[in-house]
Length: 415
Image (cartoon, rainbow, N blue to C red; front, side, top):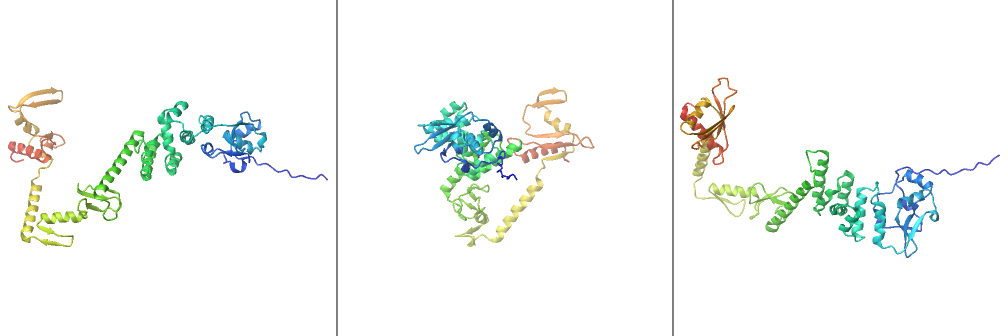
């Protein structure tokens, strides 16, 4: 009887699955603290695995450290895929270098990765930030070596200097990295940064809403910064909200002397600190002959008789009602045709006339001081004219209405 031997089956790695680098790394190897964080999490690439089975062509670059360890600089994907294949440390094709400066180490790794097609914009941004900050490469020099503009470098650096949750939103929503520069200008104002990104996302989804250009993003930033500056000036001059002590105070729409709190909604007089409703009540009371002393609970009358005050108030209301009755509407019908309205204006006052088909332009010698448009359509009689008062620079609409109405009454007193 033949003895059966159990053979351990090797489970093939799943394409795209995250690689557990901590379990695979050799004791002789350490990862570079900057270079290894450039890339997103390493994942299994079946194509690379199959290629390495036929033999490794390009060596993996290591820097030999003083303690004898080998620091991985270039080829981390090849290295960890070799480990997935079970390749021993001694059998890995490697290029071990000594006395490599930190700047040169970063440049070697960047040259290997930054032009790769699968190198994402976010990985590129992390690489650029390391080269400038750790490698001490000037942005202008870096832009020249990479063949890009200085603003391209600055936008990637700006992204890396944003709060982590703001930076992650760029990546999660696919927001163009160019917007990192205006977002960075709102440093310390995370709520405003998120609002700006929301507007950018809206613009990406709908061409008729949100923010769609860097210029518009800069305009939004300028508005926010101006508001912050205005608030700081208000606080320096008038202090915080007297009710809740919030610093979110703004100029109130109610009056130039009023301030509002965006947190609690309180309105107050900027100088006296009085609640605005009380301040207005006090002003109205004094206008009616009352006098307010010390505070809201202390009110006393002046010697003027209350009956006289009430009568004055009633007279004021009656005058308002009379004015409302006499007010001329801005649109009304005339009981005479347009010809009858225009003819008196032309008699002995016509200076110039230009006729173009169905249109006539007329210039008078003296200003008629009338501003109106007349229409002779949509009326069954065919005679009545519709008058629409036009706004004039030198007079208000009601004054213009009264002038044209008086002109028509002179021609037809029954108007």
